[in-house]
Image 1 (tube, rainbow, N blue to C red):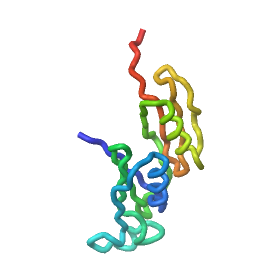
Image 2 (image 1 turned 180 degrees about the horizontal axis):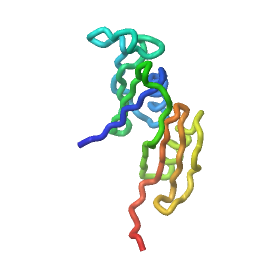
Image 3 (image 1 turned 45 degrees about the vertical axis):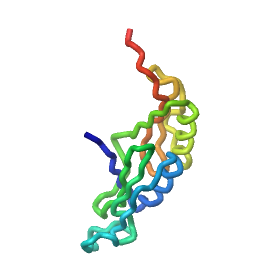
Length: 143
């Protein structure tokens, strides 16, 4: 079984994909616009910006897939209730990606040592997506 996050943006999916391509050293796998749909999409289901907006986008982040869409007019709002977690093998990678995601965003918890990771931080990027970035550290036995 796989779980692949599908992120919805209010007309900013293409911009978000380009940002994450750089910030996470990812590769854009596919971009399909509403105009590319084999069957015409009724106007009431098009997001603001019209048929050139992203119907489906896919980004590979070190072998893991994130999917994107601009959504429809009745889908609006900001991300709430979850964070995406990125775990890296080196502190250098953690700091680089954390700083990339923080550009134009909001640091919720600066990088620091915690009881579960020697380097952990939380950031909401410029699109409002919350990320937890951490050093993948072997679990320590509980006392």
